[in-house]
Image (cartoon, rainbow, N blue to C red; front, side, top):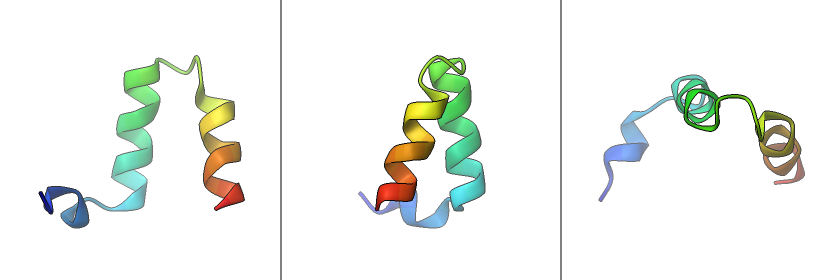
Length: 35
């Protein structure tokens, strides 16, 4: 599915932050920076 290609990184990041409720926010940021 290519639905995610239409989502900007900003929206995706915000969506992830809401899903994780900020619990793994720092870890997610580190993973994205490592890429």
